[in-house]
Image (cartoon, rainbow, N blue to C red; front, side, top):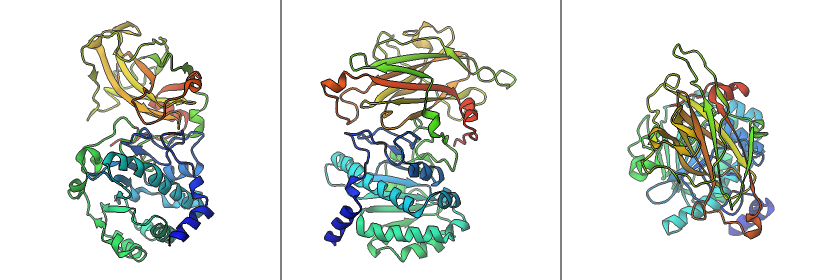
Length: 438
């Protein structure tokens, strides 16, 4: 069997597949949360993203590698019940789907398991899988092309990636799932079947026996929301909880600047009026920029009083809050740290001279990887006249796992490009439907 495995990898050039690792700038093939070798990311339509990855992100139910269980195994979540099977098989060939599945398995094998093993201090080579069946329809259960392809992939995985399953939980399983389960079981090893647990609707207690609440999404019974990322813990285009922006949305962004390792920060201030007047009608959107940059580390030169954080829990966006999107890219580097502040009009006379009592933190310092793929940030902003301050800086040597540049690389400045838009303007520009938030 080992010889066949090596021959397969050699014949299919599996080791030549480019995957995201700490020492390169390849984008991850699927959304990811809670790891160090790459920053948290969604599948965003950058130039390095494969077409099949965008198609799978668009029509698959929405999935994510989301942190780790109590024993250090990576958690993979897939919202199976929301897969758009008709569009998926209409736009993707079986070969493309198989190639995407192979990319995912290699990313898990060569990158995710590696970090999990380092953190656990032991070999980690299995993952914890959660399949959420909420939304599963009879049409999905009887889709023969999908069933046959699933059976084929499962059979191949047991030969090519044996024993990768630590535990699998199938949650929110409706009665019609039992029909599909009878077909799936026929191509699974008895040892694999023994690791599969099927839970009914809203039955998540058993998940919390194995996963810390802070590592489990709130919609699965945990406390995690990943509010710093569009779509939260598990972005899902078919659920429409994240905008499906095309590649052209990240080309020719409005603002360009350079950041160097000798001057590693950039700040930008944007003025805006309320998005809605008292009668609910639309007011002016974000206006022209009113500030430039200042070259200090975040928080330096400000008062020591703590920043307030803006809360949008249980608040209608159309009244007290609105959404602003930041798109940005970088042509190189080892990651960017971004924070965003909001100031009410009259609270500051110029960027860098801030009255901390009127300073609201709307996006805390977060390391992201714009050198791998474009970054999209969703900001909930008070619906009052004021301005946003965007602060970027190059990740320091102790942030993330990307290698620090050598002397020659450090002399080359990083090109940072970005655009800032009200949500309604961005969705209108690219003809996208309103975002559905939980």
